[in-house]
Length: 369
Image 1 (cartoon, helix red, strand yellow):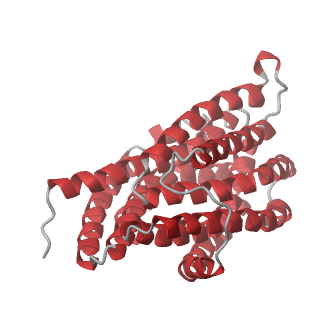
Image 2: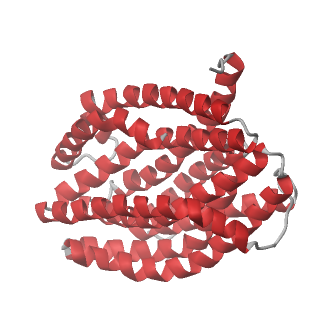
Image 3: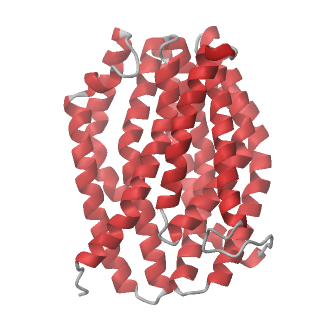
């Protein structure tokens, strides 16, 4: 049995906490859109909420890169093979860009049809379809950006993505303020303004990562090379995870279609509840990132027992954090939901959802890690 000392705890927290905070910021960036459009109407909340939920299918595809990139690069990094790690990064960001050009039009048409499938009101459908069509423009930025973020995380650098996201969320709030409500001479775009702001922010985030990569501010050698062998290895690991995530997202969509029959307020409440639940998910996913990086690095260094000890310790941290967050979901849901909307019925529905799912947070910690 390998003894885990204070240095090991410090290393795990050094990776986990920035990753958890970055994941939390990811969800907060989404939530700011809901909060700000929530001042418009429940129709706007439902439109944006369904649009964001349809985006979860895209994230299911992105799991391919999240898992595949981390698995390859963390192992190469642990083994000290940075040339192969650099080639893997180049291969995956090129593949990610190409795949985004395929996914974007599929999402453009498919997501718009979801509003018809769910049978929502005409106003919700009209607002939502325009919102989704705008978000389609950010697909290449999101796909390539995730590869860079995951590559950095695989080497243990979770601080750089955290700082980039911290700046971007401030910028997103500012752009929302200007474009949703039309302040300082900007057009009043409403729900579409939230979409435009999101596209701009994702484009700027990718620009930062490309700058850091090209200026050798990352531990990788900049290159534009493609390896079929490394891509096959990444797909072998990433595809099963992507398929599993797709099934999960499909079940969420089916549930959404059922809820749509209960009216706009119930749908809005459910969408708000999902976003708040995501606040608990994201820190948990942060610990998942740490577990993946430490596992891969340990295996690359031929130390599987150490990898096992690292992951068990990460699991303990994840359980503790998600138990803490579940307390607020169960006992103070109304207070939290009130930040999103002042609609009484919507608050009631969202609070009921949070009380129920709050009980599942500890089992989810096991699932994540």
